[in-house]
Image 1 (tube, one colour):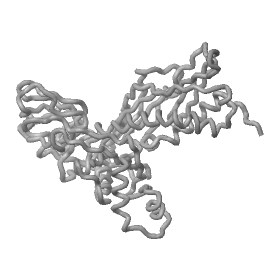
Image 2 (cartoon, rainbow, N blue to C red):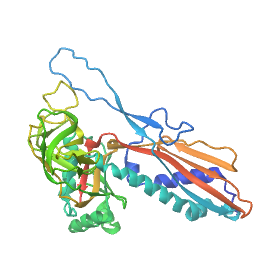
Image 3 (cartoon, rainbow, N blue to C red):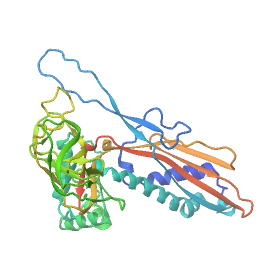
Image 4 (cartoon, one colour):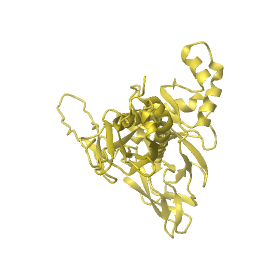
Length: 406
């Protein structure tokens, strides 16, 4: 039977299908959007809003204590328009969709999917929790179980929507470490034969070559808290080496003596120090002081009644900071996370006139929208095309994720 001549709508739908199947990290994150999703004419800089469910304090006793349901939202800026430009002949349009997909669509979409996943995995910089040691590839299941503990301690749901994304070396190491557990059950046999962890320790394990590598900042000196009773998303410190210089890099992590983590639901002291992540590069002043942007914000139990306490107490004046790692150390940043830890937002690009064909396919359930524009070059009898997707990433609940260092 002769092949049916492919149309641009066939090609665009196939591109969306291949993209969804090619994503690794992205397919495990939140893609719930506000009413602006799918609107025509979005462009770089467009902002969508993703709602965060409210948290409540609760009450004891019989007296009614009504709490306002204060929904908040996270703005997600559509910062990246990624795409691939390809060209094919009139004869290529006579191929079956499978052949056309193999020759043209899959290679192009692999590039786009790689870019989306790479950008998303950069959100490790927003995650405060961490397990493992810099320079040591995790080789016991305990490291991954402790990542699960970090999620549990932060009231992360156990609803089947937890995942782990690690790099090839981390995956090979843990599969080899657990090979002694091999026996004839189907799931373990599949792990042994495929080299993939699959569903293990409460996580859906995935390997992604786009797992980011973090390099600790230059540091210098012995930073201490500058002034007691600090709260909020900025910490003033002193004690860096006296010079105006880069000290901490976005994604560096530290603890503060005397500042413990709490469970966000029951507000119980967890008995260990709260880890903070640095959310932007930090330069010290000439006198060694610095202002460090942090997550989570410091909201002590002694603060005004709120459902969003994060720590047992504000840091004491002159309390020392302990930076994770030494200056310049590099570490792969695997991630254990819940679906709601991160969000990918996507919106429709406009369809231009004055071209041979233009098609756009979007799916709110998938949270993806891809556009294909085709024109005709009479001098070469070819059809130059461009594939585009417009997207943006944000951390929705980064405290429900955990960095796995390697």
